[in-house]
Image (cartoon, rainbow, N blue to C red; front, side):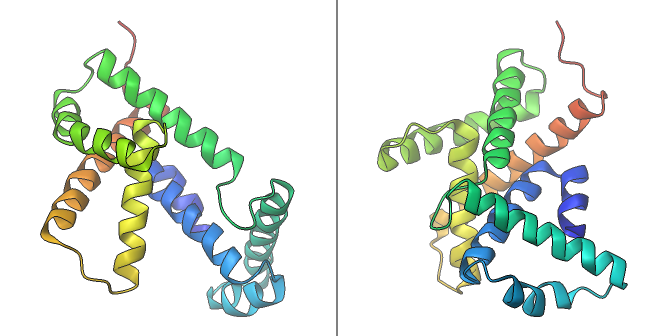
Length: 181
């Protein structure tokens, strides 16, 4: 919860990826709040009030995942909505040519996005494709699996693109970035 709040304020992409990881952790603990409490919540060095808030945050996520019937796979609806909002913002930045560096970073990965879209057979939006690809790669790295040079380059390109998107999104949310013509 504490990490999520900080990531939400500062880097929307890290926030989404972090919560995807939390969803997977909740699944790994079979939605068992006792295990989540003893193995996750207990790791926070916090006073009792904060630990209770953290516990309740995990419990709320568990309840939402169960209500939305995503126990096996999928993402919480609010994360899907946030990803879609991020893609709409991405489309706006591209359409209005708001940031030249962002345009360049996107053009550098546009073919990769199309390739992944074709290979997957899914019609996901650009941002969802890049987030899914990066998340999959991060999971492979966490399992200490070898990554090819091409994959390493893709990580770097996708990471730069998403970091720039996060920066622009934060500026837009705080009113520092003008998107009107």
